[in-house]
Length: 223
Image (cartoon, rainbow, N blue to C red):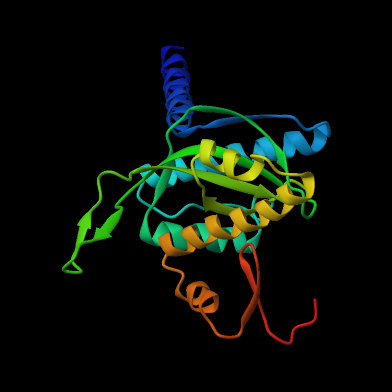
């Protein structure tokens, strides 16, 4: 009887340890301002799983392993390229944010997610890389498609600046245009951070004609 009690106690300890370990990395996301409860629940769950997996990968010094029902293939590639240069982790255990529906396309954004960025380097006048200790904390944005799958992850402008640049003294039509411009700026910044040379070359290419967020279309392509 004592042996059975000891075995049960050991199993209980292991279970409690696993639960505690998982809670160390957990970031719970609560979202508001969207009436479709099914979509809301999916977005909350996917954002929670993504950030929690990022946190665990950060502390265990490995790449995040995100399933295809949470992120698109493109979003996974973006995260992988970000991770190759500067691993990140969310610095909050709970995030409560509004869901923003974009004026262009059936897409949604969740902004103002604070992250700590590891190994941020800057180049000085001699082109040597030194650790930039002033820029360890950033904010990221998650973009969701119409089914609640995360399709983009990028660094954002500070929330106050973004709101001012987007909304100050403009019409509804102008807001859509400003969203377009700000999306490109933020994706350009993220491409720079993840050293996406192909994206940067396309931006400065003589053939570049239309830039739509993170997609660059060339001349002679019908829209």
